[in-house]
Image (cartoon, rainbow, N blue to C red):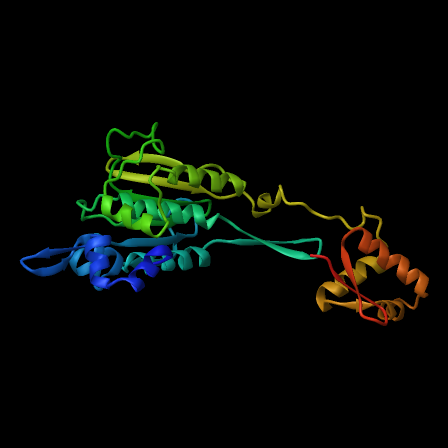
Length: 301
């Protein structure tokens, strides 16, 4: 567990915390027994007691779901399960790289926080009375789908989803609120929409298919599209000469360069070296430190 929950458990008697504060234990005939929610968050061998608690992850090579590249069947307690979901998704989605100025910028194919929100919502709102179907997370070439057993609970419909905080599994939601993973105001759908929009992607598609609730996250058509709103620096447009571009590349790899070293590198005078380097400082591409003898230049990050 995380956030305030861990701290509180350390401060208080663990049994009292679980029994009275979190109310995930119950006393039956003077015997303390775990509720289902306790098994989901803290239990071992959960599949023995709650066989429907399972997430099946699959990576397909196409958009039709015909060729499987990777898969995992998870039945862990909720937080180890979430960590394993992240590892699987990270290893089966792309990361784009771009050099901006002289800094590398990495952008994931999907904003994982949006996907994680979808997984948490699936765990919190699935219908545990449906014991014949797990939560399914499928990674296709162009999208990620989360399929969750259980229809929306009235009065919520697809049109009003995200407006009313209606919960099928109240205790699971309460524990997620203790760990700051959920709020009381039905913000999960809006959060997913916001994160996808900020990433430059379409909002998630939400559907009901019979007794199944499906959330679809569409990826970019091209990874380069994710950089559309990223500021790029064209060094030639800044009027830099070959020496200045070369020295930026050199300093990016070697961290620092002094004025005498720059003079020696290009066999130029001090005045030419100073003019070149001062322009890079004025453009805020380099910063300068005076060490007592000469100036040292480094990338202005």
